[in-house]
Image (cartoon, rainbow, N blue to C red):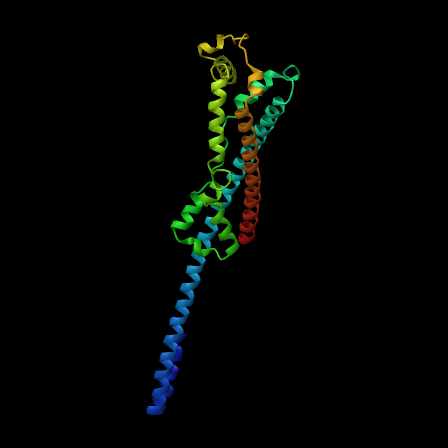
Length: 261
């Protein structure tokens, strides 16, 4: 098509020397410019297409990680709620009469709530997005801000992971291990892991039914009461923050799915 126009202009230019030659030259320049603009447009379109494909792949990877995070976080929230319920039982036990308390249940509670249950954000997809520079492909500012905050270690440390909860759990574990008769720990953990230890010599182990627990001393210990109170408080903060992050995961998921459409 361009060659056709060139031949036409050349013929017209040959009929009228200088002026028509100028027209021919200007026409050539215009054609070259148009060709360059078309090539640039095609190149930009192709680059945008590649960027779109890369961004879509990033979105699918982020969605997969968010789904895994949600599943893990829901399990941890369930665990923390159970620990909180057990801690409440211990707190109520402190003010109750031992004769009216299921002490076997309290022993189980005492040994269970020393467990850690913390959530760790999946970072692989987001780290790839950052390291590749493709984070700039996300035009949705709200989504970028949410991901930045979600993957910020400090935002998690400020609440659920700020060390206070871990510290009080460690204090509790040390205190309870010091206070509780060792045989109770032995019996509890052998019973807990009996299924996985069924091929070991533990399968013939007989629990000690005569171990004594000084319930009154425990109930009247002020340090123990303070630790239980702190444990409840920090786990309430933990639950509240984890539930907020669960909502945040849902909102980020909705935004990404909307972007993919």
